[in-house]
View 1: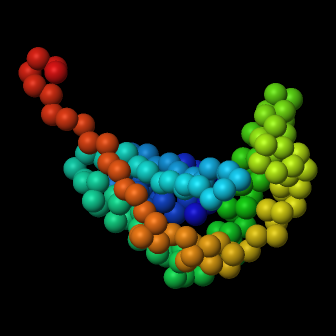
View 2: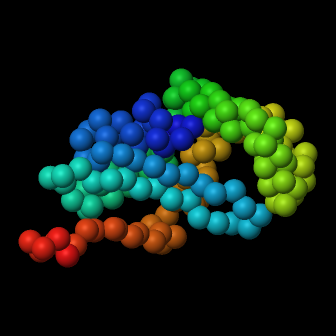
View 3: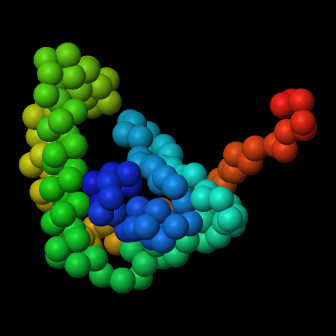
Length: 154
């Protein structure tokens, strides 16, 4: 789906924000030792419903599961992921945080081998993982819906 979901070239951004269903889209997967959560979300644009946005998110997930990812799109996503990792490890403080994270999860070597391992991922790997894990039975959906306020602002 792209290096990050907030990137303006990702499928979700194009479908939701450029498609004027949402004003923002966000998401990702938290790296942990044990299986954990991935999440996607959006800020619904006025005039649309959470149901419409949820359906659009699922439509894009289904596309990843059913249709091959083009070489161009996959290369762009890998480039974005590499850039995001590089930017997030620019400073000595950030590198220390990454090394601590890596050691806590597995080994400090994770930090030094991440980019090599990233290049081993294929578009078919992404599709296979989406088919395995992006299943509605594994889903929890939540909506933050503002309450109507009275004239006194409460």
